[in-house]
Every structure is written in C-alpha cells, then in structure tokens.
Length: 171
Ligand code: AMP
Image (tube, rainbow, N blue to C red; front, side):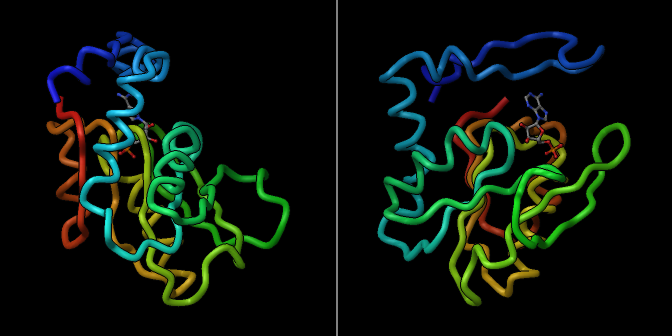
C-alpha cells in the first residue's frame, strides 16, 4: 500500500502544537486512490454478514457509507453530543487533553446485530473503544474495526486487544 501512503499529507502542529495531522484530502480528491482505499478497507469483511457499518464523527462519515454500500450493509453515525435528535446511548472517553462524549441512537441497531466500526485514523484507540462501548450497550456485536491509517507508535491496536482490527496504511 505504499502508493496510497503518497496520498496522505502530513500537517505539522494541527490542530495544536506537537500533533502531526494525517490529512486524507489528497486521497479523497483522487478517484483511483479513493476507490482503492475503500476496496482495501472492505477486503477482510467481504462474504461476512455485516448488518451495519458504524462511522465515527467526523471523518468516519466519509468512509463509512462507502464501505457500507460495498458490503451491502446499513450505515449508523456515531456522533458528538447534541447532534442526534432521538434517544441515544452515550459514552465518555479520554482524549489527549480532557474528555469527550460519543452518542448513538438507541434504536439504530437490532439486538445481536453484527457491526463493523470505521474511522480514518487509529491513534491511541480511545475513540474506537468508545465506539465498541456503544455497540455493546445495544447488545450488538463488533465483527471488526477498520481504519484507513494506523499510527503504530501510539499502540491503539493494543487498546483494542481481543477485537479484529484491520488497517490499510501504517505510519
Ligand atoms: P484516538 O482516539 O487517539 O485513537 O484518535 C482517533 C481519532 O482522532 C480519530 O477519529 C481520528 O480522526 C483523530 N486523530 C487522532 N490523531 C490524528 C492524527 N494524527 N491525524 C488525523 N486524525 C487524528
């Protein structure tokens, strides 16, 4: 996947000093790269029963629906507080500085639904763990978690021990 790596742009000190932001914009702008990224994200899950693909706000909303369409599954957004209009499950989680909250509509998943969680980047894995927590509150089951980019030195994969984790580009 060296070629896809060429479509990820490093933006130093964004959104704050010391963070190197992995910008996916060049990849989104290129039809062949976007197509290849979606194909690679889906690869381990083709032929498996996936009832719903969950995308994490905000960039999981870009890849999630494209993956859902390919896997013939529905799409469910996991959103920041105050965005979803109906009753929600919620979870608090740690960010590098402070905490945040993620919500999912209570009626979004059938009990026992088989779910794939999608995001652009896995860093520490905290956001993905919050996603897992929401799925489990709904008594549904996490088949896997797929990310376009893995920032390996932050060891997010270790935080998701026991779950199927698939990543396409490794930094
Ligand atoms: P974490 O919870 O630490 O795994 O962080 C993952 C979430 O933060 C994802 O939703 C990413 O979109 C975002 N994120 C974390 N670090 C970066 C980074 N270096 N570049 C772009 N997005 C990032």
